Length: 288
Image 1 (cartoon, one colour):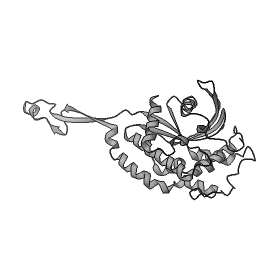
Image 2: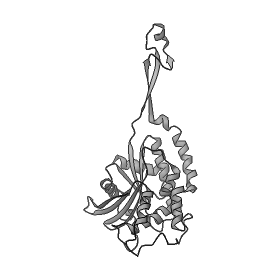
Image 3: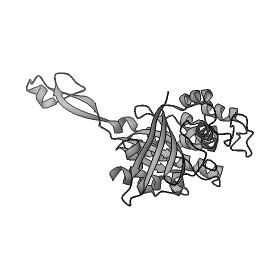
């Protein structure tokens, strides 16, 4: 079941504004359940369930192929990202827990001088406490133009996931959301799906499809937009928000639309950027 926020308006310092209709889901399968019950709001939209795709988007030629990838993962990128996962998580336990020693009547090591003089608390013992970590809510808007290549969309997702791994290595806990936005000047419709919870370890195989595969946006995302009750046919599917608004303005929008802790990053601004640059973008926004 989804949550819909209607006509959330953000006004910027220069007097311009952006009004967003948002639909939020806790997982992608909940979105698909809604799509089964809905009909297209305009015949101008493609019927994604029956349309044979004109381009071979990483093996996706029809709607059912996209559904299989959602269930099984995008295996082509799993190996590359898992190599980073193994390195990042080797020392995770030590990084998220703090050990403190104290004198006790029992323990793992005697304190010889205290033993000799008969002090009862003559053993070294220890206890472990979790290190408090900062939770970051990252909203990744993977929307981009029709001219953006499949390879570029995949690379964007890979670099973002590497960045998330790096942040968790440093002790941060990440909530990750994938967004698709369809806009024209002053208005936008957006779907947001939570794909990672901060209390769960990062599951690369499960995330590989919604974060890295073009058909998540161009097939399932288009299907959502064609059936969103508040959506409008905009002489097409509209534009990515990054083509009309600066990153600074969209950061303000995200805090208004989601929460004050929201960190919003777009595919349109990380093209040709590496993991460290993306991390820098995120940390700068987190500190703002």
